[in-house]
Image 1 (cartoon, rainbow, N blue to C red):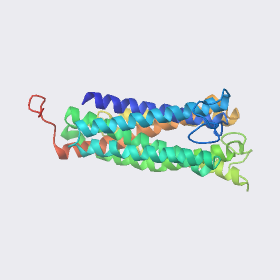
Image 2 (cartoon, helix red, strand yellow):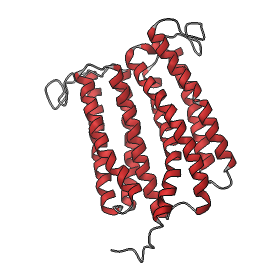
Image 3 (tube, rainbow, N blue to C red):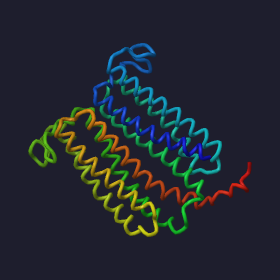
Image 4 (cartoon, rainbow, N blue to C red):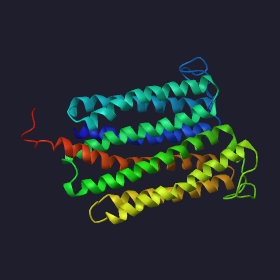
Length: 311
């Protein structure tokens, strides 16, 4: 059982790495380094060209994540078949990875349409969520569920984290669209756009500032979540950790976003910005899922002690 949990955790980390590699592909302009799919320039081995090697590395990491997701689902079926909170997200991750691979292929075949690129990024975040659900539910199952005193508080904080996640999904999608549509450089300066608080009539400026406005609005649900964590700080042991981690990552995300604009989107800052987004997404997902999984495990009951468990 613990091997399954450890594999699920490794898969979460590998998915974050995959997001970083995918953004590096976009930042370096390597999205069409392999203009065909699943081969690269008609062969399995890519040519010795930088863009082709970068895109092939992305495909390799994606395939590795796919294998890890399938292996996690197999172990979940073997060891947690009677625990829906573990089994269903583990199984759901498998078709999601398949859809993600199909979107990747469409992205190449259609020569990087921004809306598909943005959806591809958002689906990667969804895979992070279901793998986090699998990992956290395994952890709760192995420790016997959340203590009764924590369950109501966990539900309240989890609902606020989920609400924050809904708005953040819009921020992520707009960020992915912005990066591929060429709107990233439409606004010079930060926090203003070409010297003004509001964008001009240019569509790319409007897209750019919409992303900024949504990111700024994220402060509201984050503060709402932090307020709940503060009120429940004596009851909910992980609440303040989740809220403070989310707040810190958000501040770093904003700072890196500003530096990206001011320094015209260098590769390192572009990758860092999106990796931070994936970590914030993961933190919010974990907070939301801890509330949900605490309720699920409590309804099902704690597992039998090791000595009484069936062989």
